[in-house]
Image 1 (cartoon, rainbow, N blue to C red):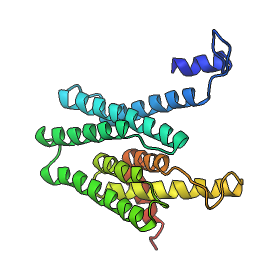
Image 2: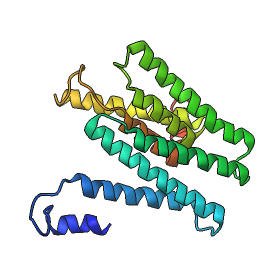
Image 3: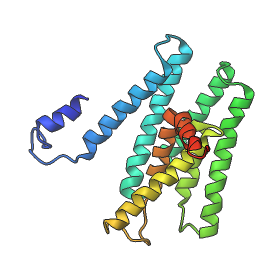
Image 4: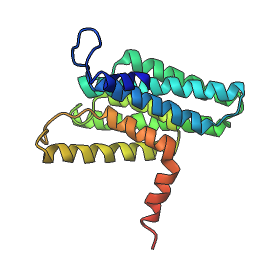
Length: 214
């Protein structure tokens, strides 16, 4: 939080050279702090090895997601050197939770199934469109998201990702910032949808289903 305060105190300029500092730095730092706080609050104050390991693992995964979010947003690329370690950490956490009896065997396989189904769905879109509708980086990203959310929560995450993407895409076209043929990175929307599903998935699903109740 202190770097964010420093940014405003210094009016967005470097203390030494007085050059302007990009707004992305305080935004990323603030988002990281909020994510860490949400993860900590979800796990509670129980002091145990399993709880500490869970919080630390999700903090690390959150850092990976933020890097992927920003990099894809700026460069339209999801770097394997960030994505593959993130997948390894998420899988290691699921395996640890299984052996620590935090997950049942069926719960563990729900994460594996979610990763397979999500990546398979995106792979189908990638192959049918020849890579025009979906990049292969999104196919690999779906593996990570599946290992984070599990089944069926991955469905909520993907739905929210497509929903956020559609809203922002339409808004950009209305503002004439993008055209219907413009390329828009999908990774950030998938990550936003995954985080929303991770923290508020049940509430969002309950609200959505209540819309169709007579």
